Image (tube, rainbow, N blue to C red):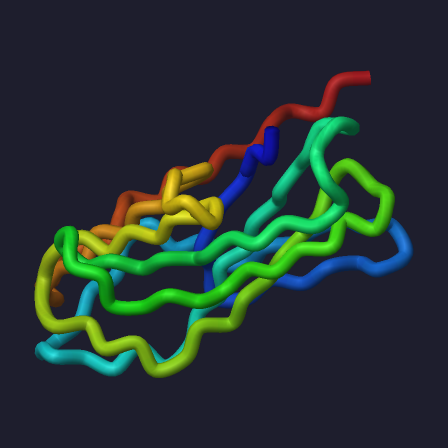
Length: 143
């Protein structure tokens, strides 16, 4: 059975080809804009897919984006596992129109439309207090 243990959206993501590690930068959980509709110039969807040894080595799925339940984008996700059990996909999404405040949801789906993973981004109108609080702390060094 094909599974998606990770789906995340961010400003940027990269794959270390030698180590096969995924790095994700500026994870998107909320967006805030001064006016609508807004053209969101670029973000990435990073997905890890895994398969059982009995699954075929190729998989055809889709990344589906909806806004408040209405589909606004769909991209094919053709995967060739190349005799491995995992595949990492990074999809750069450009020029997505955000119509107004609401919920932007991304779904990794199989060919039948079954959702394997979901990622939700809250979209709001910009106000003075729309950002999450940032808490930082320093751990004491123990020897």
